[in-house]
Image (cartoon, rainbow, N blue to C red; front, top):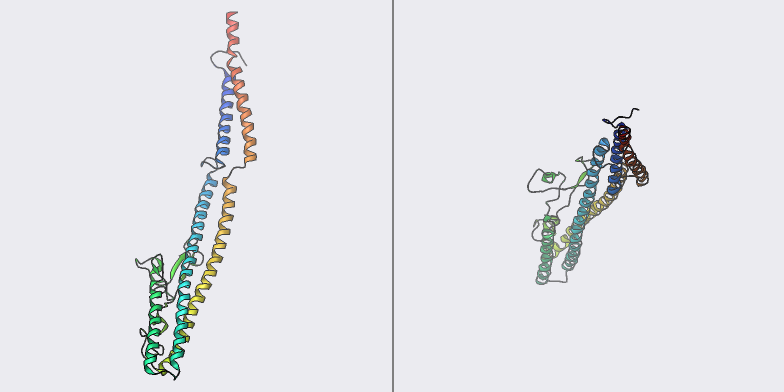
Length: 300
């Protein structure tokens, strides 16, 4: 190579190598400081796209777990109210058994019937008052087989309530409906709010009290069916939560493999680029001093 003044090719070459080494050093520094292998789209365009989709699914799955937990809380609220209603039904049957015997007169049966009707009114009050986040649970609005307005098309939700926990909107994968039967006294066919022609309307006579025993058995069975359905749904939701948690955990692991930096490997690259940068700086300093040799020849 000729000794020239206008163009210092060795200095230019050293400067180019310095820029490349320093750029790689900057990338290593960013990755080590952030903990991310993919910090920008330039690092891995395809990996970035996959990572962002995974992140959205992970966040959605975690919210799905919270949705399912809220549904369990709702079911437990309904079941707690039905437990109190259970006690009232048992007391009503006890009163019906008392009024069914012939050792009481009509006045005494009317007194017994007044407590019987009070218990029926309390059952209705509990059913109408039980709600979760202002959603009535036992008044019958969540009963039925057809989803109704709880599918999201109506402003006022009625029919079985939709519990959404998946990342999409498939009825086979991402949600299902919870139906809760009505638990008022009229739903059970007991008390003076029910049909007067059926047993369970009152226990003011011995015959009515005897018929009420049969009606109360049916009421207790109806109530037990509601509670059994709620218990099955709670178990199903708990299994759903377990599955969602495992799915989110595995997806988080997959996202980590794409996104997170391998610290050991990146630290090796950092040290390598650091040495190259320092070497390039030293060589650039030496290359910049070479034109002085031409000046020495001129000054001769």
